Amino acid sequence: MKLWLLCIVFIPFSLFSLDLTPDEKLYLEKLGTINVCVDPDWEPFEMMDKKGHYTGIGADLLHLVAQRVGINVTVLPTKDWDESVAFSKAGRCQVISFLNQSPYRDTWLLFTQPHFSDPNVFITREEHAFIGDPKDLRNESMVFPTGTAMEEFIRKEYPHFKIMTTSSELDAFKMVSNKQADMAMRSLVVAAYTIKKEGMFNLKIAGQLPDYTNQLRIGVIKTEPMLRDILDKGVATITSEDRNAIVNKYVSIKAQSAYDYRLVIKIIFGFILIGLLLLWRYYELKKYNQKLLYLSETDLLTQIYNRTKIDQALHDSIDTAKKTREPLSLLLIDVDYFKTVNDTFGHPVGDQILIEMVQLIKESIRRYDILGRWGGEEFLILCPKTTQDEALKVAERIQKKIKNAVFTTQQCHSVSIGIATLRLDDTPHTLISHADAALYQAKKDGRDTISIAPQ
Image (cartoon, rainbow, N blue to C red):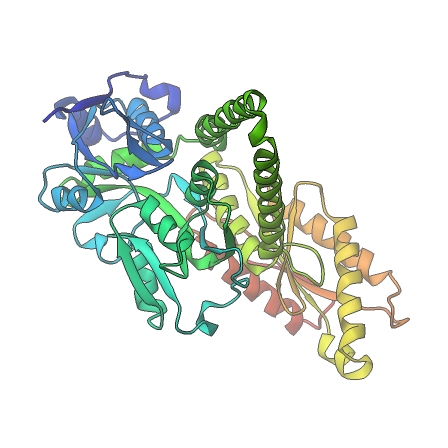
């Protein structure tokens, strides 16, 4: 069986500031070529081309990581994903290149930090309604390629779905298109790529589950923990620019196909009408999905990020801050006595107060600060590259702006603000907890107050 050499280029460690321990350096000196198992049918993430070469977004990311840590890898050919998993469990390959972590996979694999994030979305036919909460759906079927982490999660969390499996990614889309299944739940990148490539314009993206975002990682068998640690350091060197360049490389393939299709239309006049109709349908689908994406991440009342989107921004900001070793501060804001406003003036007036509050906050923060509605009358602001003292100045501007404003109620209102600055051991959960504790202290101190969490 032919093995394809993926990477033989070595880059000096210092170029990427890899902080390798003496044991890790010794391990690399003794390490031979490692075997990698991949999904041969997951376009555009992973695929084997006609010459047996491993290509795709995941392939290029693995190539980059291997190059930067200075290791050689070969792809062990398999007929499908199930065989790749079986080979990995048997120890025939030390690494699986591009997959989600799950409880089942934790039984034999160690995982790096995510090196690519991509939301999972519901793919349905055009006539299907928007999916807000899948718990409301009954008697509907969902199809997955066999062996996916998303199938594992959906079976556990939403047992009322009729789950179907198929042998390939494309077959899952075809089953939805041909009315053999009501929907599929797949990666947004894969969905957009497949719908456009295969011309399945009777399909659409009908919603998403924010908690089911693909956090794609490199998996390493448990007998090689040091290899996982070294690859993790390589993953940490990948920037947003690296990822965007790789994704755009595969997006450009679709643009070339569209160009060839227009040439055919020019030659064969009889297909002009069909081509125009397909093009119109494509742009309608694109416009609809852009609107859907906007609705999925925007708070409809205040027109700022909703809880899901600001939570995603929080995770991303913490990852960036830790990689760049730059400060990150978080402001948690609560409107004082807001229940009294609702009880006295009614909820429509309360809603208008929140809209006016958001406008005042926008006028007080900097262009690179990130504002979202955390829930009810609470707002969260992420302040990148911002120390505790700088965050305090932002909070004071907000407090002063709101305190001096006259609202729809013809009354003055105030806010309490909790500030927390990222510590080395913080996670998104602990950083929020510190800010929440500071906010609680601000309320306890009499409201219209700013409190700072201890460093």
